[in-house]
Length: 177
Figure 1: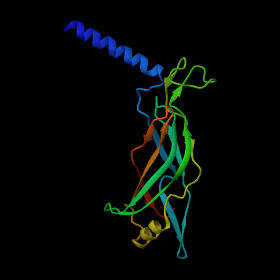
Figure 2 (figure 1 turned 30 degrees about the vertical axis):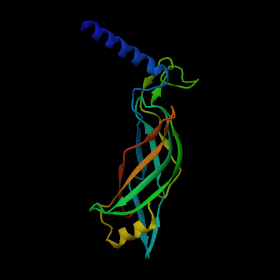
Figure 3 (figure 1 turned 90 degrees about the vertical axis):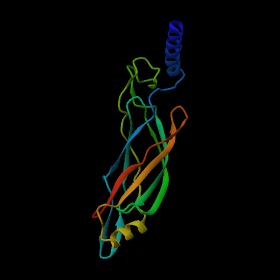
């Protein structure tokens, strides 16, 4: 019984050493997301609705491989949780790995000398108009309630070419912009 435990320990240790050398990370890929400004909003002036662009901010979590964010899906909800609209689009951003190395010149990977996990550098998207006009009209017609929100999710692949998707991030809908 003791020999079996020792064998299992050695086998598991060998596996944990071998996987990173194959480019396999034991850290689950992850990305932090923000929006600038922090809500989805619009302006109403003389009966006209103007929807402003938003930029999306991304960075990988410490130890995460790089992530190519390819597209997003966003759904809009009333405060009661009723779905009132959706939108989607392509992003096309590479978010660098959450690693730093002693010598980053040749490129920093989990196998690079002195590699250690850190939060990745921030990447800023091009401006996006996330809020559909129909949702903005419905929101304004309902009296611009403060409890309406959107759930946005991102899809792409990691630097080791495995599919990637985030969980859903909640964003509030507000006016004025």
